[in-house]
Image 1 (spheres, helix red, strand yellow):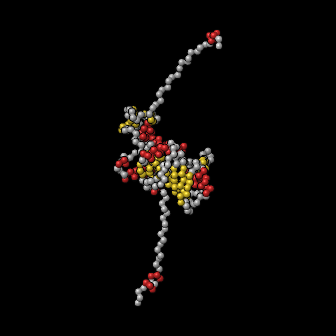
Image 2 (cartoon, one colour):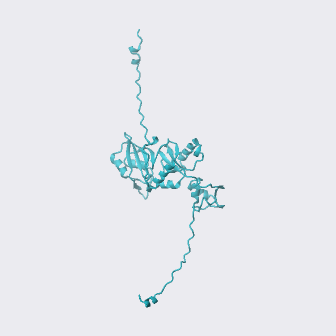
Amino acid sequence: MSRSAVRKLKIMPPKSSTSTPKPDAPTGDRLQKILAQAGIASRRKAEEIILEGRVQVNGTTITTLGTRHDALVDHIRVDGKLLSGPEPHRYFMLNKPRGYVTTLDDPQHRPTVMDLLAEATQKKVTGFHGKFPRLYPVGRLDYLSEGLLLMTNDGDLANSLSKASAGVEKSYLVKVSGVPPASGLEQIRNGIMIDRGRLDEVRSGRRDRIITSPAKVELVRGGDNPWYEVTLIEGRNRQLRKMFEEIGHHVEKIRRIGYGALRLDVAPGEFRELSPGEVMALDRAAKGKKVVPKAKLPEYAQLKAPVKKRSAPPRRTFASRSSPSSRRES
């Protein structure tokens, strides 16, 4: 380019920034989350407490949801009582019996797993059971199902375990009415079309259907009403019952015996706290990493041996009682 051409170029000065800098985004956790982590109430109930004007932060009453605060810096009071900070995370395995719902409160007034825990902790008032944290179930077992249920106050881990993308394996013992055909079991193993959501739900004028993820199915005990061990990597509403109903067989009993690397090892209605190693294994499973359960199944993860009917002793007849051999010789 010639010098004359360079002279003709008009050099434009750089544009000055006239945009207003954005204010710093609020830091900390939402107030309702802080209350839930402190064991005050569930997050939904904590929202009600805030709206009722029962929470003060640094002397100011907060009635707006979603404000963020730092539990380690701010002075947070509920009904005038200063929070002592978040509760330490605790993790428990519960063996849920039939006849309890997996919820904190039931509108039909059926017994809940929280009622079951309250009954169990009254029997164990020493040690760490003296001050029991507010726990929440991880996933669900329906009213008629039984077995392994995780309970914790660690909301982050509970949410991670419940995500279908994590693919955490859950194992069940399932008793089926009648003997399913091999072709039907193969459908379940490969993935089978079932109704999404509740059985009576109809969306947009049609049934909402979805195909399940592949499942492992192994025969545990044969007979007219066989038992199978079924392993799922998802947990849809009444999924096991729906899968077997699709192949024409009713599910009579369900017992969850495995969750990730955990295996059910407490009696029905009882619970125990998980070890640090077991919590680490759950965290690995929640991140999609491989975990290996113990090879030997605990007692409560196995089927009991069928009770054999005792043969009744032969009844003594009148003839046997009056036989010549039993009479005294005259």
